[in-house]
View (cartoon, rainbow, N blue to C red):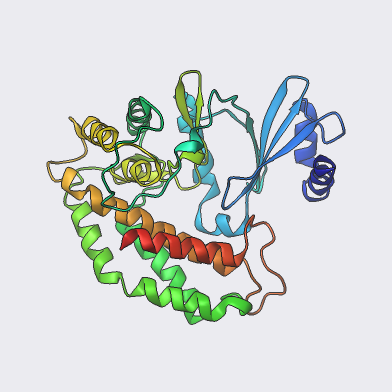
Length: 338
């Protein structure tokens, strides 16, 4: 029954051009194709479609996520990674960039079991969830760092400015969900109170950067697939040219690694890195803190779109989670910055 309801929902929501593409690729939206929701995404909706050996992933991009990521750049950066064998093949992009079709990658193990949330100064941990995880992650990080520099440069300072400006406009215009307005505004004030610390973090990161590089910017375990003895990346909506510590920070912030594994990963990544200077290792806690600051900004932006706003008749139903879920994410992220 769940598959039937998903099929009916996709029949109603997908343009004819997308349905035609699915049929031509061997996964028509009929009873012969098995449809399974891939529910880990916090912004977009993903579906695994399989039919007689044909396996595809259909992604439906949320309107809220599209407002904070340039889809044309996402597609271009996905294809940069695809050409180097780091990303699954992107087969089709709808003209409005709302729908993508890509090859499904059969995984050898569930990498998401390494998911955790680490503060800038994590406690000592001797437990090893996955032996040699740091080796695989280092190989991936080095592969990403060697990709051509994307055509959409976004420094960490510019990213913070964009987030802050957008959130400030939402707050000033009272364009927050009517039923959650006070809760949203309270959290915005909490984030604004951290401006001085964010400025200090940004200054520390600027001091160790020699040049920007290809940056995925969200290498949490849900965005990594273990297949053919190595790691693959998915979800390139935030990829850009940015600070060389950004991707290392996202791995350290979200992966359950032992203290020894973390040290090996850090030293292996920094050794001979051509775009970082001797101040980089000391700046890693700042990079982790900034990762969670950006995550908190993202959570507020998603929450602002999840309910009915002033002047709008309905919330953004393309979001997979509720306003309260995104506000809880904000609270969780801010705890990690303390």
